[in-house]
Each structure stands twice: as C-alpha cells, then as structure tokens.
Length: 144
Image (cartoon, helix red, strand yellow):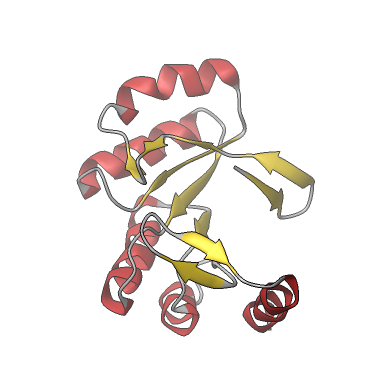
C-alpha cells in the first residue's frame, strides 16, 4: 500500500495483514520489520486481541516505524471502537472507515492522523468505487 506520508511524499506501508485482518503471527514478524527498516508499518483493527495488538505497535515503534491502524469494521459502533483501539495502541495514523464524523470526534485532540476511505465503499473486504470526479469531491469533503 502506498500513501502520501504527512510531509515527505509517497511511502510504502508494510501491513502485517492477510485476508483483511492482522495475521495471527504478527508479533513473530517484528524482527523482519526491524531488519527491513521499512519506516512505516501497520495492522488491521481485527485479527488480534487488543493486548497483543498493543504489543505489536510497541514493536513497530521500537523498530523506528510510523504506525498505522486500518479500519476494517463497517458499522458506526465498530468504527468508533476502531478509533479507540488506535488511541489505545498508540497508532500514528488511522486509515479507512467511512463514518468520518464519528471517527473524527473520537480522535479529536489525540494527534492521530486520519485518512478515511473516499468514494463508494462496496463489500467486504471493501472495494473503493466511483467516478473520478465523485471520488475527488468526496475527498474534498473529507479534507474539509
């Protein structure tokens, strides 16, 4: 996955995920993250119990990574919970989610950056769809 890093241009984000969830062996992969010096690493909001996910994010930070949590959940309550998970694990960036007001409210004052999905989200795992102009308009709404 690439994404424009906050101030330094495009960056590769190494996600320890498969089939739209964090892989169960994620903690054991931390030496690879350290050795590869990827700089940006993340996981999904589902797949690991919260204490293990928190340990994973500690490992990411110890490896010198900017950390990313991606929202897979699709209901407003689950998205709010994902935002709180991002806070609890100390994520630098929360990716995804469509209930922007709920997530923005949950993250207000935390310093966590939020990059929501834009366009039309279809299915699970989600696919982002829409005409280019509609996606651009939705991105502008999200930005504002």
